[in-house]
Amino acid sequence: NAGVTQTPKFQVLKTGQSMTLQCAQDMNHEYMSWYRQDPGMGLRLIHYSVGAGITDQGEVPNGYNVSRSTTEDFPLRLLSAAPSQTSVYFCASSRRTGNTGELFFGEGSRLTVL
Amino acid sequence: RKEVEQDPGPFNVPEGATVAFNCTYSNSASQSFFWYRQDCRKEPKLLMSVYSSGNEDGRFTAQLNRASQYISLLIRDSKLSDSATYLCVVNQGGKLIFGQGTELSVKP
Image 1 (tube, rainbow over the protein chains, first blue to last red):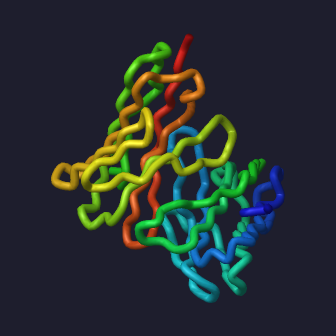
Image 2 (image 1 turned 135 degrees about the vertical axis):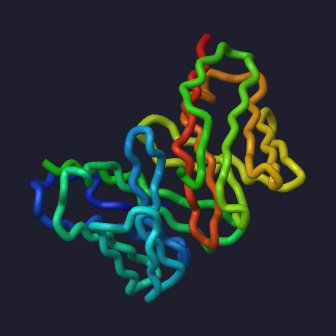
């Protein structure tokens, strides 16, 4: 019963390095999203997707890229890591947006950029 | 101004107390509303949806005031296990926007 799986759980990067956070869900959910969580800021939406081939920007998209080539996968790419991207990243999925509102979250990926 | 704002915390209450959290949102076209709970260093989980007529789930009551653009969560008879961060969530055109969260600590 996997649900939403994020990898890696922990990562340390140097400034300027690139990396990809992986997210996969096995619930056939149409909607997937990435959030970052910083102390005192709550969760902020980075990018989201309402289906394969469709992505859109959230509140804080700069410095991140996403793609949605399949229903199951929604990777988040950091192109050139900066210390300001040190955060906890959560991937979440939902059967659809609208009034359901129930997001299923992965366990989070803790990223430190030195 | 953040699109979704919550009462600053933390709230420290004794067991058995009643505690209320408020949340305001800026976009009057917001479609639906939710409360999530997040335990320390864990992922958030849906606590309850918020309906226009108000709704109750055991010790938890959620209210929506569209005219004033705020939602509330009332917890009665607080338990130690209610200690967590409570997140207000607003659906704005298909995007789920979170408030910064209010931390609740219930003490014996």
